[in-house]
Image 1: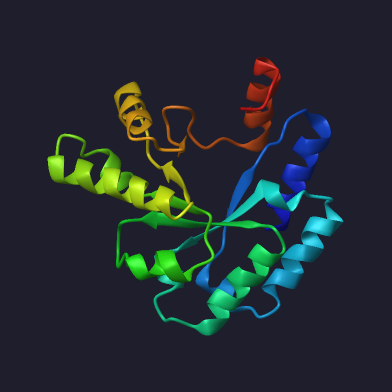
Image 2: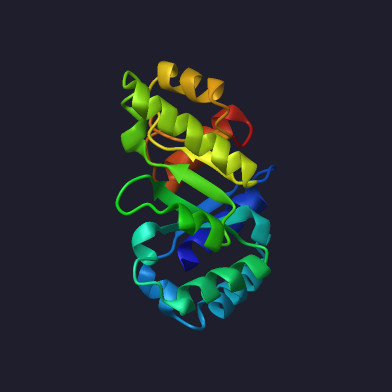
Length: 186
């Protein structure tokens, strides 16, 4: 976590633009009653604008219905961080999570993306996006690998796209090289 804050701070100091990052929070981290305070202290230490950090949780972080999990998420929201529900649609997805959780973003799992020829799958993706938008949630499609997938997700009004179509995960030095070559942040 600290490394992510440190890298974001370095990029903010080095480049113009508002680079946003996502940081995964494990179930164990969510059970830590002091986690929100620790994160707040890190944001102050590295002078990070909190709206530039999104914490990602997965459904398995919610399976045991611990009240401290939701409490930690609410504390993070109160500190102006955003929360994303990652890998939505796999495992034990429950629509009740969408109404109970203080989330800003829903990330559609990549397992849906490779099945555009399946009409039922397309109905599900379209419905997830429409439902999310009605709940004022941003939608990110994971696993976009080609221009056809990108165009389909654009037509379905998906808000953001991520995947190998743009880049595979990179070490920081290679990421910075791309920024410098393009003269801007994405």
